[in-house]
Length: 190
Image 1 (cartoon, rainbow, N blue to C red):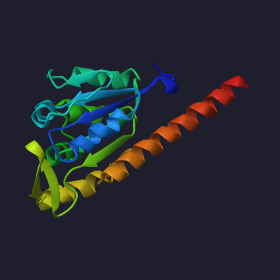
Image 2: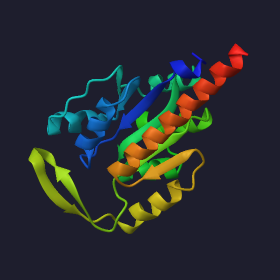
Image 3: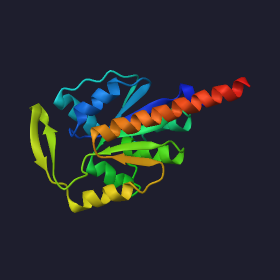
């Protein structure tokens, strides 16, 4: 599957409830999305009662993260990790790929697939949704904020800190891909 117009979005969810509902809402507006769930994400989706309606759903059930081979086969044009917990960000910053989501990020980088990350812990203080529609104050640690700054410097990685930024980056990526497909089609016709 090397034709750009046939490629899909790989959307990974980690175990955070922070703007999870809004991420699911964005996913539902998109076409050609496969969902990748960390073990914690599968639990959190059920705990919060959120449903998803997408193409394929892959869960973190294999030690070697078998679904990452789809990046080698050229199935995806983009990786979106939203929401991304501070634990996932820390692992990605330090090159640890020991679960499905961190392996996806590593393999996306190795296959030059751009990543968009909505990081949960981006401010010194924020409100986050807890189960059963409760809002709680969250105070990310200094190391969490430092890791956000580090991952912002990684190649082919765009980090956003709010839903508007996430939606804007996703739409910009899709527009750029649409223009690339149109340009390729014009070139092949001449």
